[in-house]
Length: 156
Length: 156
DNA sequence: ATTTTAATGATAATGGTTTTCATTTTCATT
DNA sequence: AATGAAAATGAAAACCATTATCATTAAAAT
Ligand SMILES: [Mn+2]
Ligand SMILES: [Mn+2]
Ligand SMILES: [Zn+2]
Ligand SMILES: [Zn+2]
Image (cartoon, rainbow over all chains, first blue to last red):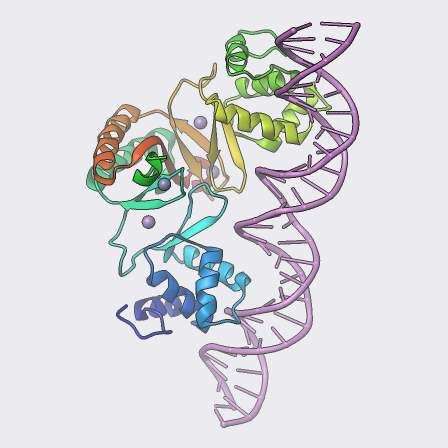
């Protein structure tokens, strides 16, 4: 991580202030956790990781902060079908940018992929334009996920 | 509907028996409800609709039957982000076939669309093949959804 | 008709997420 | 630095869609 421990990435700090939010210790730690992983963590995952650096933090605050970050557009919230939401920084140090997901229905594992993204984006653009016109629907977002079995789970 | 009231579509009846399931009154009614709508009903929606024809049915049975139908591949289960699952017959009298969804984040409305489906399918096929090879991931299913605002919600 | 087995429904339990509310923290202003 | 208004926090309770339990009932096989 290119920023000091416990401070969170400075550009996120700036974004927070810019939105009128206060930058607090729990929020910094939560951003640190999200910035320091390539995984797709649940609220409770984050709560546990945060707990080691900041033991007094409550699960409620984790939920509230995540909601805030989603609303501010800094993180994405996903449902991969295992009954809990999972979160991912929109632009992280690890995460290279826009991507979609392969979801293993065997073990619940998630694989990021960005292959074919250019062609996907191209088709999405075309589709969005067509659908906007036909249904007068203003598209702001899309979700593409593939479900199946990962290499390991195929062998069982 | 091309079948008698309360009996459910006969081809579904056959499929049930074929899978070793018993065809019961609650299951018939639930299939009737699913066959007679183009909406994307939640378990509780279905429970309420079923209740008028079969007042003694329990919500538990609705959930169990839906799970069964999903497992048998007769219905699809969707999560549109409003905290409850929604269900749709795979091949209904109304429903023309494979399609994707526009989800209005304003009112929660769902629009079926099949435009560009051919191109989508083509890209999906190509993507699936590429991803299978690269990640050794066996794809069995996909999910594509667009989020945005419907015509009505744009005016507010 | 009898038996076997699956399906049902009332109820309670589960578990992720939200609400509530009293307390604490942040930050702009003295 | 001290003050105070407003926002944020955390413990606990509430929420709510979905599942598990279990005694009863219904469906198909005999
Ligand atoms: Mn990802
Ligand atoms: Mn549909
Ligand atoms: Zn797997
Ligand atoms: Zn709408």
